[in-house]
Length: 183
View 1 (cartoon, rainbow, N blue to C red):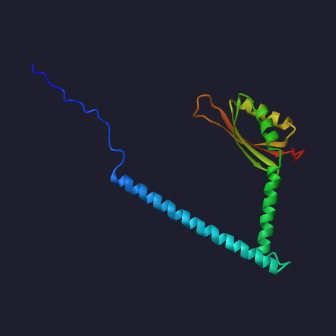
View 2 (cartoon, rainbow, N blue to C red; view 1 turned 45 degrees about the vertical axis):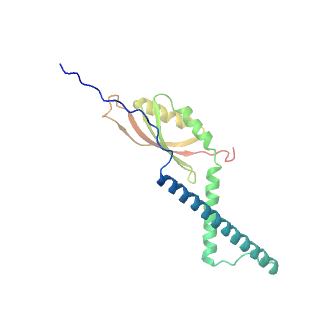
């Protein structure tokens, strides 16, 4: 019987700290950092000079502080302002109260899948899944009796036959009653 000898293991994992390529890369990085620092200082100086020129011009021409805008620019500014006001109104709505009420209305037999609110129209589209048809109808009744929603309507529903429990997926729409827009 022949005995095989194992070859000796080399467990010395010490390696040089850096290779020449690593040192070259480090030097290039330091050089690039220095170049970017110089460029930043030049740009900062140019900005400071431009601001000083602007202040001198404003002192020379008192009363002329805004550049005249064309009619198209004025319409674009008004449209942008209207959009900002619309978004501000939507953000000031009592979203927390609506979400808290919906979570309180839903029970273990209902899973809310998605909410699609349209604050401008005060409409809410709810996609959910119920354990069965009676659970869906009970959820619909609870929504109708909540103080925050009215005109609750079932848009569609389907029984999911692929799942053994046969849940019901459905979509509802409702009108969101906003009593106090500033919580």
